[in-house]
Image (tube, rainbow, N blue to C red; front, side, top):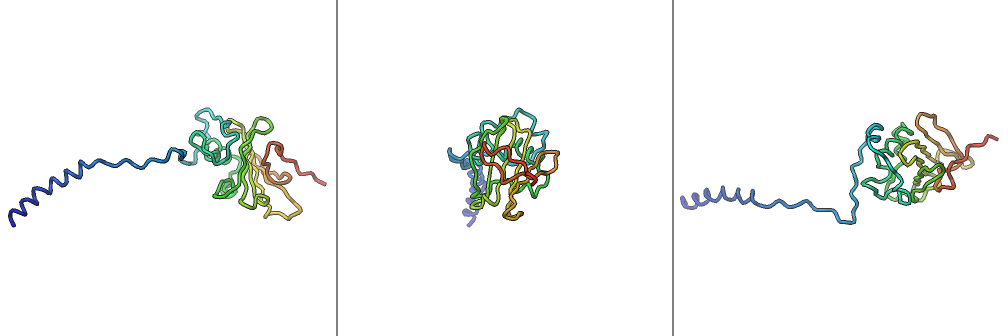
Length: 188
């Protein structure tokens, strides 16, 4: 019995050493095809302006495609610009890509600006939105069209620009270069 206790006492410290010498496994690596996405954190306008911004690489891509570590709506300059145009967080929350959302490739529109469009799955004619922004992340215009808020005969979208009151324009939000700028509401 004493011999077994002595052997156990001698092996106990060695087992601790063996644990310490066990090589640590590397964390699983992402597949080469999976894009690395920068964390999506809210930042201020000042932080977004720290370096030069060029959103032109997004042209021709879908809004959910990752370019330089960010999806278009997750790009710090874009997030900052949208927040400046649409200060109400509840309203701004509708400008997002949920699973199964519809989108079109990002295009250049009048004045060299960039247009991104999104719509509700199987209901894009009732709910859609668009963001028009300069390639340097400035001069945002945000459009939200929610047909559930209106009668069928009256179709107008809400437009938001930083420092300006919300205005209404005819129809849904523009989804192609030829649809921008949206038509003003004609009083009749």
